[in-house]
Length: 371
Length: 218
Image (cartoon, rainbow over all chains, first blue to last red; front, side, top):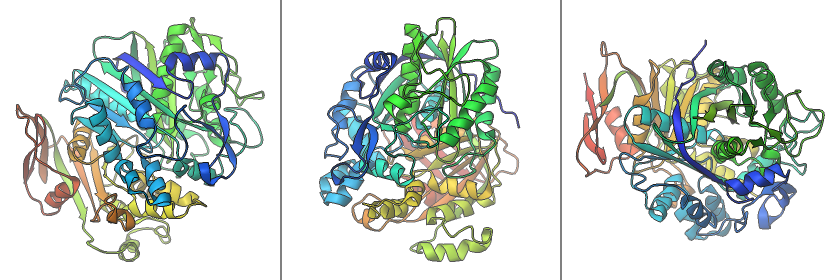
């Protein structure tokens, strides 16, 4: 059944991100230079294991501390959020993450140090953030693996359109720990190979990275607009997509219709897995013929539940700069001719599609353009 | 005011029933062999959703503070050789995904909420803002073992599912979030919401600054 995109036309008043390279500007500059943040790192931290590609923020170690070292990093990111009164009735916050502080639960199980328990559940972690950042009680928490940030964006949009808020803050973070690196390694998609998104090769692999980001949405101001948003959950298999790519098509079709008269470039999910990468590149080529496609996870790694917001901030930065970083880490042959391995001038294009995918065949995508 | 009418409801209150007993009790409701790898929350959510006939164009909202507690415990116990199956299963919306994957039922809009003090009001707001004709609001918790002892898991197991629409005719009840001038709030956690649903009790409570939750039954 055809389902329309939510034509949201909501403004982005501010956005910013934090990656191992630094803030949005530093990250964009590093991507444009073709740099990789991923480094071979023992998958279980001090417990050892295979050296897998991980991108950790300076000051954050894979083995969790109590308090987590990333709390300070989130504080630094939050200093860049404009305005105040967040978490009050008219200024809601949507916190999205795949893992919240679950790394501390693993640390508690390993060390029996009860100090870790103060950060071990989503509500405990976000409660501490609320205190640290001075937020009120109006803070929603969402966790849908790697499409989490997109859900926050859509709910913030609906809240604004319903007149229930003046501005809305979406705040997303995921920091690596042995809990998550061990899990992906067990799934055999995080291995010693570095990721090469959309490259047609024999073995797929991903890298994982720390990431955090925010966006402030409004109805009236901001130099970018989220034109339309779309979701789809295949519910076909926990870790595999429908083999014909129908799930990707179902999410993208409404956005292709919404972008019919626009000139987009595409920021795909592109983790480096083979089957999903092939399906995604094919579906994007069908929905947006000729539009150049990039993924940045070959450099930053997959920042999990934060990836949608981290990459939105970078996409906005790329639109502002007039130059889009290429698909770092990939070589020919690519799955489709649209895959851009090198950076390119985007000034002849007017829109970017940002897509993310997650366990359960979850798909989320949006259209971002200058307003 | 945001409001929807309740057109179907299913609650599961298994008390201290262990997962194996839940599997045995519910296995006839599922295709043969389907329950073998399902968790207790997966079984209970699937049972709660079954009579609501979820469809692709429904909005699905899920609320749970701790979600897959026992899968999480077992996954943590599997280190230093972490289990890939338990890693997948332990993710927050795992129970709903078990239910829907078991039915091979896609759904376009799925919003898994977590949190604790404001979980009910925020998940309800998501449900009541949904633009689709039908919204399914489901949720629940699983009684943990060693995580419960550390107050990092629920001390109760339960599940619920509501079918909400804007249509008043034939409704079982009505649920609303009403804007007020009040700033005082009362503690209202997910287990209390479940208890009201299970007993078909009315609710009229200040759940957040400036918001009252009202539940009435026909």
